[in-house]
Image 1 (spheres, rainbow, N blue to C red):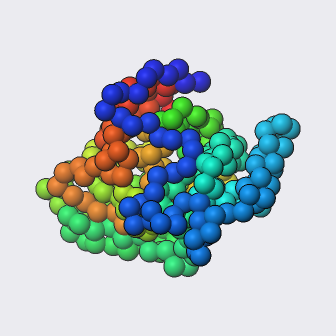
Image 2: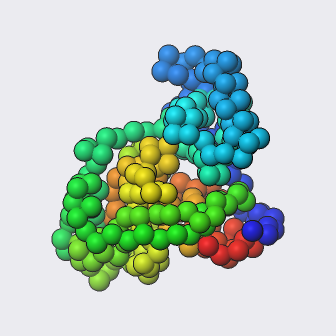
Length: 266
């Protein structure tokens, strides 16, 4: 279920504790509420207790428990809440100080850059396109894996084809509406049918904590390539390293063939 080797020297492992702070969030970022006060100890202990019960009795976290963990986790200065599998083994990560949220009615996914026909898609318009459903293991580069995850949405190649990439386009860049998170693929990688613009996860709409309403699901690669809170897709001349690549991870994130790991392919 995923044999591991060491991380390469150039890679800085993802932490299982508190997520990294943005430079502009050093004063009152992770571990603080809007007024800059730390999340209460009782709140953190309460969420930890819920997670402990779920682990002890082998059940999945309820929607309410997942929502509570999503709110408290990024503000927990101890980082302990990030060690709780957040329903079916997922862990919550955010590269900013809180979980960003956008109502489905407000979603507009733009496809632009080096294309002949720039497009913008609402959730309703995405739903009218041919839908794909794929079941794959979800593998994090830190080592944990969630088996048999069901993803649904639109195959990325269909959105790219509708925008008609120009001949000079060789890569695709994705940006998040959190203001910090970005990722890239080569155009060949982005043209695979197992790369989805995902609107569904495990038979439900993708929650904000899991990167919804719309996120990427780059299923043959490690989880950091599957950008959360998708806002914009841009065709570019070359691959532009994303958030995690600037922190030492491989630009090509194939499961079992990158980052010095030998996990089983997904």
